[in-house]
Picture 1: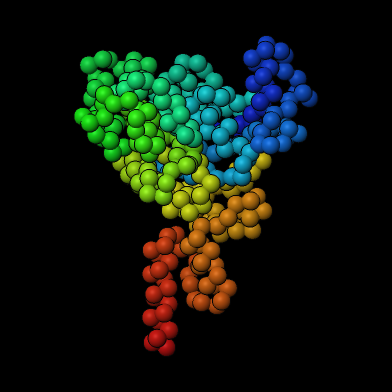
Picture 2: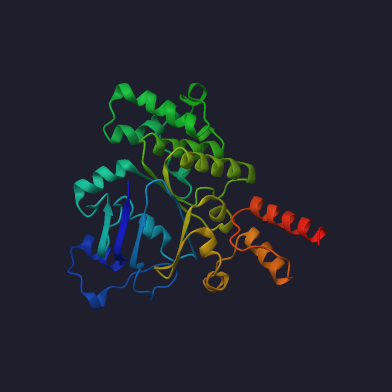
Length: 305
């Protein structure tokens, strides 16, 4: 599935007008985004596309519009201005949004807080059952999705999700989204609050899902995670797109990222410090492995001079 944002702006004041039935006036649009009640737009003239099969990372300071942006990807929110298209169909149409919600899985921060059922099976089965998956297919869906997140179906199916560890609870919540077999996974800080080992395992699972063909959109405050996992990175600032491109392109402009409160990944910082010390390193390094290899090659070359 291809998701396309066409000149999307969003006003929470406009959302309030929709709820109350009040007629919205342009001069009265006053969206609250971030911590600034004076900001006019949560999103402002945002245009880009999520391409099938890619891993799009989304970065930005708190209140930059990231969460508002991803809630447009399955029609949970609709633009005040502009359009969001899924394979060319406008999500503003109710029937389109209904279909897309089964194909675009949105996982909020701390999804385990949304667990509610008495058993793991019932929690994981809730999504596909709600989307009309027949009863004779449910068990297959639940088993498959639990195995994909590293949980034993036979051991845990009848357990209360609240008796599990925090990491296991998050996997149960994640399995509930995967049980709908989405084409696109949209993740809002999926590793937030996890201990280092659980965090590493969870991100490895996300990486594997992408390798298996799932399109992934991931919001993260960790530049190292986005640098390591994403094929493209979108940087938001004050509701607008600040940068969009391959990781090496986005992180090449360290001054622009620093200006909006973002840092650089550790490999990039280290490479930059070496270059400042006149150590001969090629540009465009993309991983710790390639950086280590380039350093080794440079050192080997200096020994032969």
